[in-house]
Every structure is written in structure tokens, then in C-alpha cells.
Image (cartoon, rainbow, N blue to C red; front, side, top):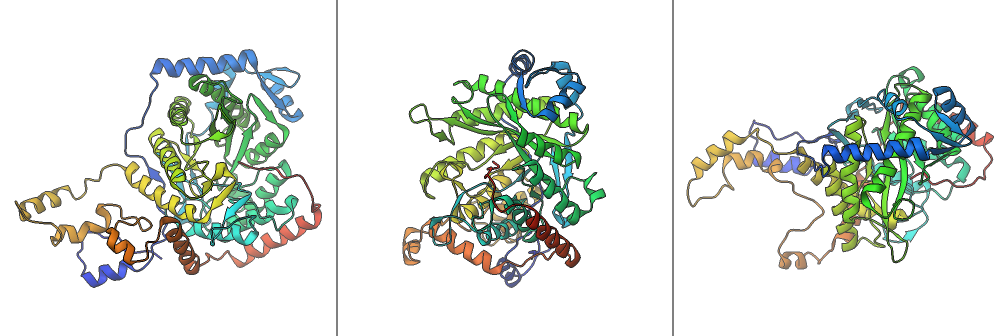
Length: 516
């Protein structure tokens, strides 16, 4: 449902109260950044990183563990020595120049289409969690029903722009067949854009076939409708599974996140700038390969970025070095004029506690100030991605809405009216009853639903409910109010038929590949 926006026409208190009682689940448009970005590198330093990355590609090379990719590179003119591909910087620059710098994501509900790239950004939930913290705050293995609930929440939370894919792993379904049910759940319970599984080349092809059923094969060839993610094996390796999945997406002109999997200090140098140089080389090698497969297809500069504790070897999040690297990577992506992906609201906390909040807030601020376009893992992430918390999911989404409002920048539309209010009120007065306040209070300042700003006396009188409990109650309310955006009957039947046929064909046992 949509709440009528407060505009210039004044309404009575009763109408405003009624409007506040109707939940607005209308998706926010793609975030158009209206604030200056934080760019810590000078042009000289950008060129230094670029030169170091190109030297790595030319002199060290990147391993492509895939016979098809090696043959593709030979035909493209690369220096292929066994599995190691040495890429001339001129070839790399020529290839990445054909990547679109912006495009539009098309959802099954056209109202949820999203401009993407340049100064437009989208928030996407976390994926890949093998556990969840459920509505009773119990950590356990997820099911298909749990996954559906997360897709329903994604549909209802305005700042979330995608239903993603396997937000949690549905353990009640065979591993080898999960990608079918996951994709169907993403399509069924939300009419926003979504992600497609890349856990194997064949799984990626199944996703493409299901998207063709939903959108039409010809439409897909010219309209991005789904996003794939392909992780590199740092340092400097791309494997057969990811490359095969990448080709499946590229052949259909669907965007792929080319994401080195960086654990700073473990699989990169223990230093910020050299880590970015290596990551940049890895991302460029994959971005260039997408254009070898299909020149002009959309691709996204990606990464999964963490630093490693030098005491324990455990991945860390929310550290100052990660913030600096995000800012640097943003500069590099803009240098090459390609859209880029980062990760949001990351943390290693085991519960939804102060650590989780601090880590997530630190990460989000850096991500927004870095100008990232595809802001993945924006809701639910905890315990280094080992579980998705239902409570944190909805709070993170509200934090995304707050970050969205900040990153939009300053609004000037009511400036003259508000200055007139200063004249009207004069010294010693107050603005609470002034017509300007009554007209604009709903949009003047962000009012979070899940944070409590009452006095301590009022908070205690209301039961002294803390954020985790409030968030779980809110989640239950949202799920109770959910209304499914129904698929076309014929499309739904075709999708179910495809799933049934593929499940008959696919053995019900296989190795699990996490897509992160």
C-alpha cells in the first residue's frame, strides 16, 4: 500500500493520523547520491594503483582454471602459459571500455525498475547464511519457509531494493536442487529485482531459463533482470565453476559481480594500498573476460572485502582499513568508469548486540561515502556471515533508509516557506503548531520506528523492551501484514513445470558451493 506523500496541500489532523496508521511498503527509488564522496587518493595515487595492477596482470599473470576460458583468452590475443594468463594492459583497457557504465534493472513490477551505475545505488540483503536467528531468536538451520519469510520481508522493507537469492540456505531441500527452489522463492514472494545462483555453470543456466520464463527470452537479451556473483580465489585465481557461471550470465547479457574474495593479510599483502592493487588486478581480469565472452554485456566491479586478525586469523569487519579500502576501490571503479559492488552492515558479533551495531554502522557510513552502486549484504549479516538474524534484518533495513536519507543530501524545496515561518514565529516562540511544521513534519526529520527515544520513565512503563525484542515483534507484524504480489498464472505454472522437470533430471545429492 502507498501512503499519500505530504505535499503542498494541507490536510486535517485526522487525515494525517490515518495516513500514519497505514504502513507504506512502497520501495524507495534507487538512491541518487547527493553528497560529496570521500576520495583519499590523489590522481597520482590512483595512477600508481592502476600501474601496479597492470604490472601484476602483465608480469605475474592470473590463473584461469578453465579450458574454455584459456582458449577464449588465446583467441583474444592474451599470453597464455599453461593455466596462467598474462594480460597486456592495452588489451585490458580496450576490453573494459566496452562495459556499460550504467543501465536499468528491470523488475517484474515495472514500478520497481532501478536506474543503476554512476550516482545511483541500490541496497541488497545478505545471502549465503548457513544458519539463522529466527523469530524466537534461536540459532538453527534454515528451511525453505525461512527463506520465503526473508523474501517477504525484502518485499515489504522500502529501503531494500532486491530479494537477492539464498539469504539463508534451505537445508530441508537437496543441495543439488536448491537453486531451483531458491530462484522460485525470489521470484514468487517479491516483485523487485533479484539475484541468480552461480554455484555451478548448470545452476546458472537453470536460473537463465527460469528468468526467460518470467521475462521472455528476447527481453532478457536487452534488459538486465537478474544479477550473478562470481567470486575469485585470491590471490589471482579464477576457477572453472565461477567462470562457467559467468559465461552463462554474460551470454544472456545479464550483469555479473566480478568479486575477488579478499581476506586482507591472509590472501593479500598485510598492507592497505598493495591489497587494493592486487584486488584491482583480480577484478579487472574478470571484468575483461566478461567482454571476451560477450562484448558490451553489463558487468560490475566487485569484491568481498575483509581483514584478518593477526592474532587469531579470524576475519574482521568494521575496521578502519576496510573503510579506507572501500573508498580507494570506489575511486578505482570510477577511474575505469564501471559500476561497483561492495558489502554492507558486516560484522562478527554472535548476537544482535552493541558490537553488531557498531560494526554495521561503521561499514555503512564508509560504503555510502565511497559511492558504491551495488550495496550487497545490507540486511541481516552477523557472525561473519554464518547466520542471518531476523531482528537485525529489519533494523538494518531501517538503517539503510536512514543512510539513504543522509546520502540524498540537503533538501531545499521548502526553504522559502520555512524562512517565512521564522518571521511568523519570531523571538521566543515555537514552531510545533505552525502550518509549515504541520505540513512538513513527516518528512523533515527521519523518525525511526525501531529505535526508542522516549524518556526512561516512559520506556520502563512500556515494559523496558530492548531493540532485539522490539525488532522481532516488528518482524512478526510485517509477516502478518504481507500480501503476495501474485505471479501471472501461466508464468507460475511454467516455472513450476520447469522446476519439476529439472528435479527429476538432477540427482538429489551434490557438493555444496557457497555463493558469497
